[in-house]
Figure 1 (cartoon, each protein chain N blue to C red):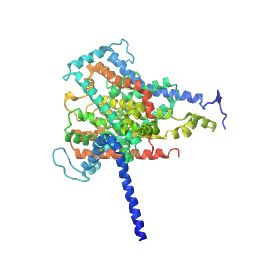
Figure 2 (figure 1 turned 120 degrees about the vertical axis):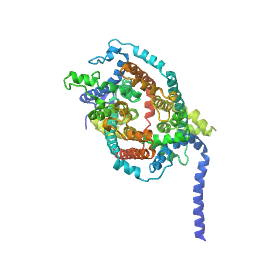
Figure 3 (figure 1 turned 45 degrees about the horizontal axis):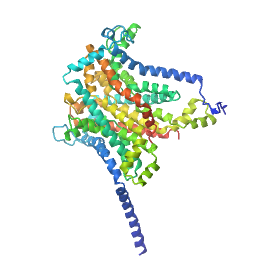
Figure 4 (figure 1 turned 30 degrees about the vertical axis):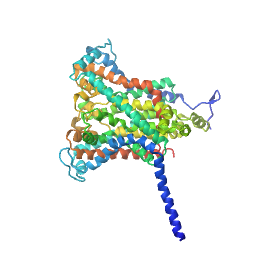
Length: 314
Length: 290
């Protein structure tokens, strides 16, 4: 009898918990109405495409015929039978590993260097560093600077100095395409994370630095390590996500400067491979597999870096 | 313990002259790397033809001329689709995309930041996760989706996806969380204001820097958008795409293409200069917790 009562009480408590949740949902129905338009579109244009890619990557869909399920065949072909894809993976990694951390470091260092300048000057310097990343296709100027004839700066200067005696076709030469594209993408990479760092540095409570000075912080490097970095960890995290995502999605600059495909696929990235199979050959199943791999690489890199950063200063 | 330096009873932070000099040198070198190419674009656009094709090339322009800009306008007038149409397309897509995004994202951000309801953490985590991959991943399947919706080759295909970009919502939600005081909202609710009214009348004016930032980010993205996979017809293509066509014209058009690039970059740069302080303020709360 007593047991029964206890059970009944427990079940009624559970019922109230579910009821309570339902009540909470009903009470806040306005919130759902407010979120709905955005979330529906977000689901349709971000979540659905990702999930759909995963499904399609197991088929041989080509937009014309009814798709057959081929399981892992696309992935097997990618890794064992598609030499160009392996080049693309290698190049994407090289770009990401060089451009991601360099642009992150450069964004932080510049933001930190200009932090103590007077506000007016700081605004001008911010503009100088930020402008290339928002100016659309202005990076095409690098094509002029490194043009293949002697009207380009690089060739003209090198010929004048006697280092080379014939013009180099920079963007048609396997040895130079990758390094040049890396330089150009670094040039355009001081974007959102740079601004987040500037704001993060500005937001640090100044009394912390004074307290640090009292406690024996002797130079700016100690101050950076003991006070500045730990105080702006959330911004560092946000900046890392923006830099990583940007560096993996890299490819547009190569197409614009070196053409598509680049000489001997020397700067072919996963993005190009995806465009090639999806946008031009309509092998949707195959290109979805490429997209899934790119997706996993981006998410994986982000998770890894977040884990490393969360250990910072603890 | 190091001797504490003070000036006017305020602690002076440890700064060595050597460090200042070193930092200045690095900053000047990096600054030159960033700035000189930008300056060179402007120089190129002002050079007459004989200076553009001069050997050895010269950085500064000797007899500046606006001829390149005039040539650009002439080229615009003889293009097959009138150039004003490309400009109209870009302006229409940028404006409609930006304001739709602003409205939907701030409405959702307010609910996510200020109303406690079951499911809100999950929703925000999804948005945060989507910052970790870029839209390249979804281009192919979005294309299928667009064709299923019969949106291919319409403005809708360019405008509606811009409404649900995740960076805007993320920044707005973070900013509202730190900058909108809960007690103000609470007193408005007690006075009988509906949630929608509280959002519009109380919260939105408090987050002006965030919505300016959102407008600028969205606008820049749409303004700089080139050829889209979703559009085939010439008359729906963007200004940026048309500029690219002029640039691809080769040697004869080097001057006009430099002029076109200057025009393209002027808009986002001007917008940024006007609103820089607001953007920086918004970024102050952009931080991500683990």
